[in-house]
Length: 93
Image (cartoon, rainbow, N blue to C red; front, side, top):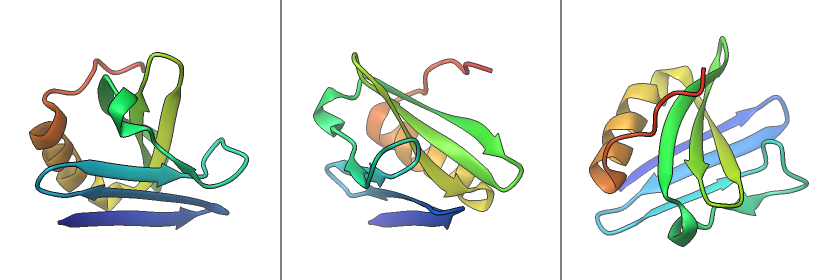
């Protein structure tokens, strides 16, 4: 299991990658800690958020959930999510 988490400027983000599933939770741009509905996710990507954090974006039909991670975790998160979900969506930036 891979467990990545970050508390950043008052927000919390966590991505856990297991052999058979992925779970994620975030409080970034949310009223409180929110579980990402992984069954509804149809794509993902990693985008820069700031000089010291990246956003893992989980895209559903109705919403985009942004989970903040440390920039040092970007590569390992990308490798694990690519293994779980396939190639990322195109960058929005």
